[in-house]
Image 1 (spheres, one colour):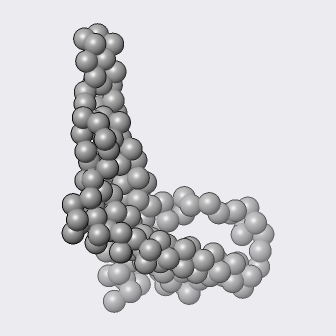
Image 2 (cartoon, helix red, strand yellow; image 1 turned 30 degrees about the vertical axis):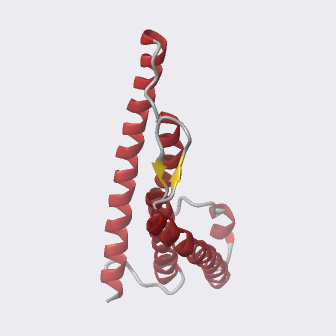
Length: 166
């Protein structure tokens, strides 16, 4: 059972990371097109600012799960390497627990605003384009939930010794 949770977490994290990379590439193309349109033709693409602002938050939360699973979050490996095994496990357990609690609190705090944004059709922006808020809020929910799962998975592997092949 644990093996399936680990595998699912890894596959979902990688998929969302790839989606975020494609999204970032698309944003890059949109920004370059906006700059070219503005400089060469005197007409910028309407709404680029609003799209970029919302997309940056979504990209961060799409990549969050992969960052945790690949141990790319803030971590002092040099200190961990010189610690005795038992001390290392205690420090890792504390760090994983704090990370899981932090993202669980973000998850809990975002549920209400996400539902509100969905039910009221909340929009952001006052210019040429008004961007719906609910995709960003739900991406924060998905990213935070995956972060909690991935911190638990990391604890199972690094602290309790469950191997990915077990």
